[in-house]
Length: 386
Ligand code: HEC
Picture 1 (cartoon, helix red, strand yellow):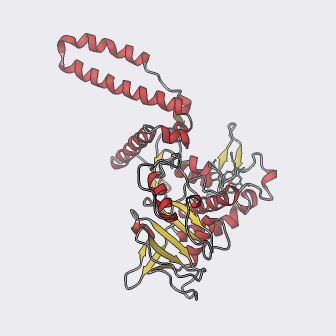
Picture 2 (tube, protein in one colour; picture 1 turned 180 degrees about the vertical axis):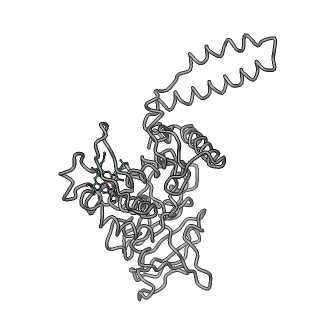
Picture 3 (cartoon, helix red, strand yellow; picture 1 turned 30 degrees about the vertical axis):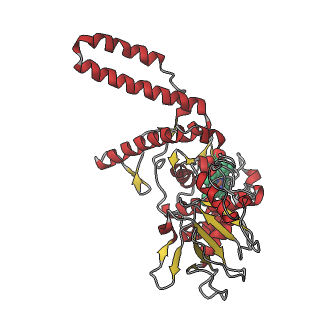
């Protein structure tokens, strides 16, 4: 991710490519020219521009950016030739020259095979209920090859032509969600067309999306267990929160504010803190722990989803911090008194010291928040700007 942060132009470039392709698809759908696939408009071509490859290959991304600049210049020249008659031939003559001189990127890096679902968006909202549904389906259909922890060590793994990948690695992040959907429902093939993973075409679309939610949540927890950090950013799962005397509301409605999730279990009373919105997580509505916050989420699915993401069976007493964009950023282990910068588990490239000009924060939480705010998650997934 280091290179990413250095290349401030990459995010807008990928955003632009994605936006143009999505816009085109929407236009086709609006004109009635795009078919439908798994409930959303189908991408009609076998190729698409790839954001994910540009992320990895900065050199090609630079070439593409320059080529796009040259192409816009060409458009300007053509327009100029329309209105400026005297210089028309000069302007027209420079067009082929520019086209030859443009640093065209390699087609096989910029263009990748696409599926009808490549641009599909998950309709689940990454809800705890969807993660729970995915968990049950995963145990039923996928464990044999992918293993209980998703690392690809299931009992059937060795018998496959290709070893199942580690789902806790960056793979799920590199792929567009729509491509994952296609792979789960239609299976995967190798270069010669031989099946490497069987199709699960009897699953409903919602079930396949739920599986993707579960795999992401589980991958986050596994990454935390193995490396001590969330190596890929993970968002807050959507859960319903009840605040004293008010209508229940989804967790995502606090987007724009920092959230502190406190899993019930530590007896210590938790003072409210104006810098964060505190939500207590309880394993069930009837759980006997004292209320430590005005707002409570107490569905078993919510508890399980957070436990999965935190990579622990012993969630009680754990605290998690999410930034204003809804990314989970830090964890404080049960029993720990305060926060420190070491609790930051989802880090971006800018190292410490990026907020050097600011006055030093008064406490650990302050330092953590300063770091979180100074280093927003600018990660791109499959070309989608988050
Ligand atoms: C019979 C063994 C087997 C089963 C069962 C299986 N998989 Fe796979 N899966 C594989 C193999 C092998 C690969 C690697 C395929 C490749 O790289 O060509 C794979 C790849 C994947 C990938 C990565 C696809 C990509 O985009 O590269 C995902 C996601 C996945 N499986 C999800 C699932 C889910 C969800 C289930 C259950 C519904 C499941 N798998 C069941 C063997 C299996």
